[in-house]
Image 1 (spheres, rainbow, N blue to C red):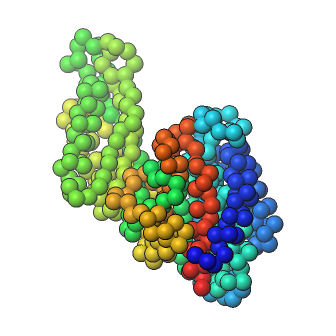
Image 2 (image 1 turned 45 degrees about the vertical axis):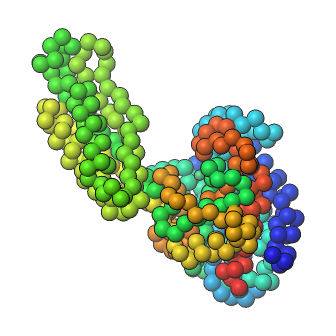
Amino acid sequence: MKDGIKEKVIESTAFVQRLRWDIHQYPELSLKEERTAALVEANLKQLGLEVRRVGETGVVGLLRGKRPGKTLALRADMDALPLPERTGCPFPSQVPGVMHACGHDAHTAILLGTAKVLTELRDGLVGNVKFLFQPAEENNPTGGAHILIDGGALDDPKVDLILALHVWPDLPTGTIGVRTGPLMAASDRVFLTIRGKSSHGSAPHQGVDAIVAAAHVVTALQTIVSRNVSPLEAAVLSFGTIQGGNRYNIIAEEVRLEGTCRTLNPKVRELVPERLVELATKVAEGFGASCETSYVRGYPPVVNAEEGVELIRRAGTDTLGASGVLQPEYPGMGAEDFAFYLERIPGALFWLGCTAPGARKVPLHNPEFLVDEAALPIGVEIFVRAAMLYLK
Ligand code: NI
């Protein structure tokens, strides 16, 4: 496309890369994004945007176009993960045990690059662009989106449409993935405590074995997905921890389990905990034990609106050609707290391919995960084009 946008994006590449290296070297955990927020704030001010802090570490920048119109929000998350980095990159984390293993360093740098390019293109904008830099995306079940939402980031001027991206190692650099409807899953947490009665291991009949009861509870809960959820719906119930007992020859009095439940359809999201509480309680009771359940709702599903998806498709096609814009056959069962914005206003999240063609795929939240640098200007260009298309 001969509209000068690609050239401006290319000019901004060094700026984006420098920021990305800087943020990658100084990763900060959820709600501790002080250095990152200060860096974002300083850069937005330098560009001449209206900037304000929301909460401790949230930052919102507002770019007003030449003429009034609609308001588009673009959102990036800024937090890192408690993992020791093993990427071998030339700009590794300087903070022991903390790294950007979910690519939020790239998200933040891409959004700052977008702010820079759109500032240069301001005269062509009818309306406003709001840049939301959000803390604590990794802080499930609460997340950080509510900090910006409760802090009024979507008001004054009121946001009409919101977009975001997430780097996606399953897709090669030079492609994006986007689809209408659910793209990512609701993520809830499950806690179970099964209580029996201790006795000597040689005399189990004198006690109530919490381990045997727990084994049956875990097995019974597998039937929720296989027997209660429609075969045409998606649901995952996984227990990642089980702990109980004190000694090999003592009947265990207590077993604790922790798990995660992922769903796409709000109705299925209601059904699973109902069945879970009923089954776990009654199965445990059948063994003379008790089961205390706690079901904590985390992030809702990310449900993309057609309007947002169409905008990303057009911006993506202008950036990468039609062959670069993929429609994933299935949503992912991972979660993103961008879902909270989408409960309030229409919008869409897209996956930005970030594995160099031919390179080994490393999943998110892995100590070896590293975003391919060539993905950064692609993210910038798609955001810039989406804003220019929406605010024509
Ligand atoms: Ni992430």
